[in-house]
Length: 326
Ligand SMILES: NC(=O)c1ccc[n+]([C@@H]2O[C@H](COP(=O)([O-])OP(=O)(O)OC[C@H]3O[C@@H](n4cnc5c(N)ncnc54)[C@H](OP(=O)(O)O)[C@@H]3O)[C@@H](O)[C@H]2O)c1
Image (cartoon, rainbow, N blue to C red; front, side, top):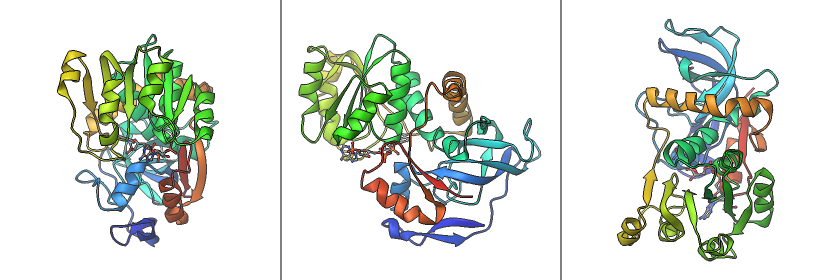
């Protein structure tokens, strides 16, 4: 089958279209003819040699798929060949075929394209798990979402706003800020021109923020802690700016703060099935109705995965970058 293979660890130029043997589904897996997959920032780390797939998962990049079922293992229940499905995978999305555990495969709503479906799992799962399951954001609270124009940010802004919370974002351009406001943010801060701690304090009349969703890491850690209210929660889900920092633990103790980290990929199948179900119950009906929408920036053909990675690493996207496979 056709797939994007890595000729080594490095820049986008290591990604090339090639031929590899198709995956074989286990007892509980579906073999899916992939029509669309999506980029995630983590793919760029894997491309450079980091963020390895969990044992037994494909070495091919790609954490989410949408396509049609072409075969299945003997223990699969309730799925038929030809069904349109989408979901999270441990790897292998940038390919003509991929495998997914049937309990993580969700039916694609009739009115959705494969591209719409492929834009949903990773960012909505990540946003829901962190903001609500771990961060326990409630309707009367405030949240600051850094990189509001990222794939995860664009999902996080929508679901936080929908839950009734007051949403603030940071982003690197005024255009991204305006688009975050269109998704439900009340205010945006251009981190390139304005210190977000000063601005958050001004915007909240000195009260601060209940929950911060952060992807930047080390350079933001101390500042994130400084704007949290008593019993505030910092959700650390990315380390774009670095991973090692020094903080004053006195602030954490005095203000009874929680710093919570999480990574989706290495979690067990049982945990990922539960994550899929929590998303399916709370947000999928709203996505089906169009109350919430996956934000798609650009669709590249699979063969142009290299250009898609260059585009992502230039921080040009607002929302998701898709790869059309078929
Ligand atoms: N823990 C998990 O389970 C999990 C799951 C999914 C994603 N993630 C993480 O979530 C983050 C977002 O992923 P994504 O795929 O949605 O990303 P994305 O669409 O590529 O967006 C990332 C955005 O971050 C901003 N950015 C880049 N470098 C920055 C810097 N040094 N300082 C401030 N902002 C910067 C850029 O927007 P501006 O133009 O605004 O600068 C960029 O467009 C990544 O760190 C990813 O690894 C974690």
